[in-house]
Length: 218
Image (tube, helix red, strand yellow):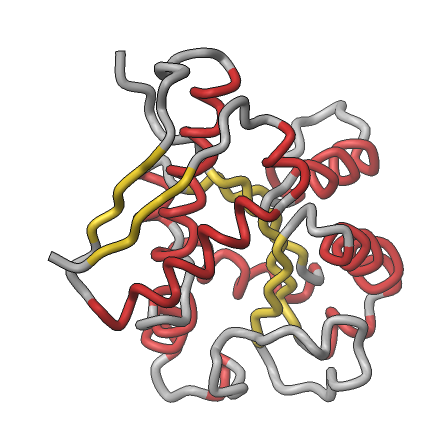
């Protein structure tokens, strides 16, 4: 039986003052969520009666991707900066999670721990500085070679394949996967995503056979 791809878990780290912008951004992730490519989580999903700090820590520790929604309030928040950013960078340095700064509002963030990471939008212009905010969010998250669609779709499929191998849902004789990509410009980006996934120590430990792959253009 064919297994559905495993969703990539995304943690949204943001300042409470930016909740309306977080909600706008999340709408632009709806397509990926409906296709079960991603599962986005933030603190508003904590159930009544749950231990808030424990829930946040658990999600932050398990997410595949951590989006840092950067703004003056985010940089100024002791909790965001000292707790969430610190844990995000620890996991980033360990190769356990991707960390992506998303520039919401203009602020000097060049001294932040995540300053060396390529942000979205790639132009470096905050989404709120754009005349059309929806267009800015769409370009940041889904723009050609810049957004989440391509990388996270591939990662979701790779996670599903890795899980299938770990649970013996695919033949043990499998040694090679062929991926055909129509867009020649996408090939280098896809190769980077695949190589990054297979080089991840945690993912490698779940693989029972030494896979090889071929990436070609029809």
